[in-house]
Image (cartoon, rainbow, N blue to C red; front, side, top):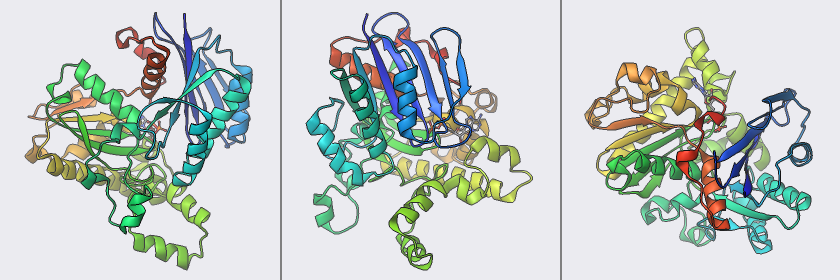
Length: 398
Ligand code: ADP
């Protein structure tokens, strides 16, 4: 039986899962979380008793050592990596080659927040398991055929020729959500206007018409679009110039400010975590304003995409916030009855799969990026994984 490992490396966590070709599919999964912080931890389940322990992982290098040296993944046929940026060249999943690695190293400056760390993971696995097939699954691939008008940035043309345009991200999640819509028999999966809202620490929306991606809120990098847990999202370029000058910031300091000190954390002044903010919002005005701003921005994007699509047939909430927070979904959808979006209070409160009672079908779907990576890797190995056999209970809650 073939086993493959999926690696989903973020800025402060590395999620992993082992899939088998047949049987229950996912046999092991876990994550190293809060890398670089004093309370970093490792959890793992599916193989023997569940594991949860605090570990010392000051950096990604150490996290990779923990992964590759202390966990027995069994005999692996391949490793699939989530890779955030494929640039113009890589528009679908692809076996990792030296040529690709050179391309991705060059692309590192497109997304210094993510790509260098991901390349380090690929290198580390290569060193530990030389000869093992590795596959890159790109978050940009879903959006590869965005209409020109959605992809073009209003800057001088010469930059477009250098690949400075909207790429869009969260593609593995969006691909999964569209496949789920189809699996659930929603006609909008192939014929209709769909808005997908992936609301997690990273957050974005995508507009899809007749199964084709038409627009998305993230741009050249994942820092654009909606405000997020610690990212600004869209920011007036005048604010960027003013801050860099008045605060005398280097590029790195500015990048840290907009990627790690802003968003929910920046506005609330206390936490990047939506649960914390919701708990405190009645007694803490800054927490309240952070939550309000987030909901307002999601609502504005839904309105914008309804306009771009000429209406809306289905709205899908996903990601840690989208899947778990009835309060946020309620506030986002409040006042959108004019678009046909009306929530059923009870079903929304229960995180039901369908939470609407209006014309637009509003769904809550638990996304599964790892499964999309696994599917790509298995199809590259010439075998298949069957969603029906997936055990949905092997994920941690929000
Ligand atoms: P990532 O983008 O890192 O994968 P997740 O998709 O896990 O992040 O989303 C994390 C966010 O989801 C956090 O802000 C967390 O507070 C929020 N979240 C999880 N559960 C709930 C809940 N029940 N209510 C509100 N927010 C929640």
